[in-house]
Image (tube, rainbow, N blue to C red; front, side, top):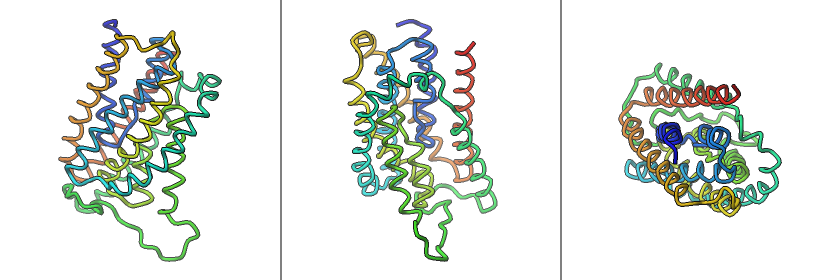
Length: 284
């Protein structure tokens, strides 16, 4: 286990933890290209490491969210248990998709992530027009629920199901944790507060990533196998990222709704720019 490997991966793992605490950010965007391209890890092992980090962060956030009453257990379990089926389907199809599309893991696009960050800036600015209040744990804190004015063929509440199933399928197919996407959909479709959306999203993410990681584990090749040094590395990265999640959550739960949105925006944009910088560096 080289010093360069630890010097690069340990800070990245901590940054992922900060992102996970704010909005459920996955390790995939930052960790997969570095492990796969820069350090030449087996692709399946790379995906497994990323999913393991996501699992650890999700577990920590579930505990923190439950302690702060920012976790909808019933809704989270309802969505995650059904989503697990789509994750299994994604793992099955990934056995042929991943080997034929390795280029997707070498240079992932961070544009969509960057746009999400800009969206949270807009959300924070809109909140600033109202009175900035501290997070009080209520489901509607900082959220304006749209009152229906006319009958719609498809409601926002209905859209949560295909949205969650699509993300869980992607988790199984390519190993993306999906916590941030779950959180965004919970805010948009069910009008959850940011903290409650993140906490509930991490419950969904924990179950789907465990399913995905289990499927990926059995596909790790013998040449990229799980030696003792690799196991120690995985445990170290998971632990460091969990510490980042704990540290970030302490900050997130102490902020007003407006400042929380700006924090999320900053973390997401920083991660997106960092991913873009990694991509340019590895192309050079």
